Image (tube, rainbow, N blue to C red; front, side, top):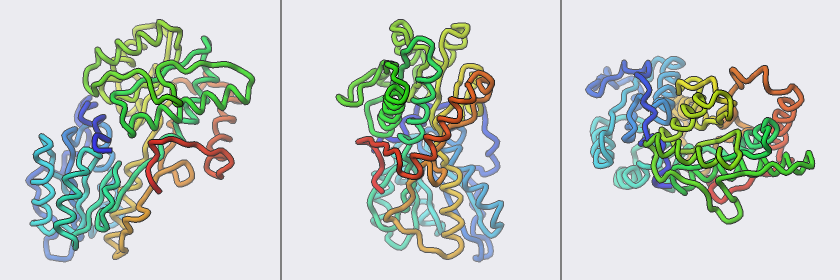
Length: 355
């Protein structure tokens, strides 16, 4: 899981997020000794990545809105070498809660937390297995299952595609769920919609081997489109923007399913986005900080695993596709959510977080 937030390194830096009110040198947390200080270390994607870091910071902002006794601040890591330094800096500043964002920070967080057993840490998208680190993970296979079913129902060619940045668990979990959702549609409808770019059984598929280069994303999706795919789900961070921009240029030839943060809020390509498989990082972070500030001990086991039942994952609204998705299909996708949440449908992936 170490590269879990390589998406972020891919950098969906599409303009400044409205969260710059906490500059790196803001050291006013804990003034008067009564405030509860929640301090966040970004990974290399930075605060304005429109993904993990932006979402986690939003969670801290919302916690502060609900409890004005909470002071929040962040420091941005420019390189992986900064992780230990920044985490240690917040330990020395006696922050009450230190949040690390993304699996890239797993090793550094585990090291610093082990050396400071009385310090409360939290981490997004990883579980280092240390008692004083509260892990927040997301079973995105569940929401991706919905997205796969939706894609199969919307495809005109009978072929849909997906590709990843790297064959690592935080990527393949989306692809597994997507493939299973298509298979479920086929079984329910007696159809044979094909998934291009990923074989769940063999765990082999199409990858850009990069989370930044849009031309690599375009290259992979062009190949899938050439094979007949008319809906594609890239799980490749910024590289996926090569797919969304090409879809816009295709004049409706194919559409895209985005991941992590609603693509209509985080990319300029809403017009081609059928939906997004969303991780609800803000609410997970907000809840953790509010509990900790209220004196509750955060349990590292089981930590938090976001799923459809607890709204930790979801699919985004259909936005510009809302009128194009048949009411019957919308209802079926909602029914799938209820069935997964109730345990009637079981979604499995080797990449699922431990509960």
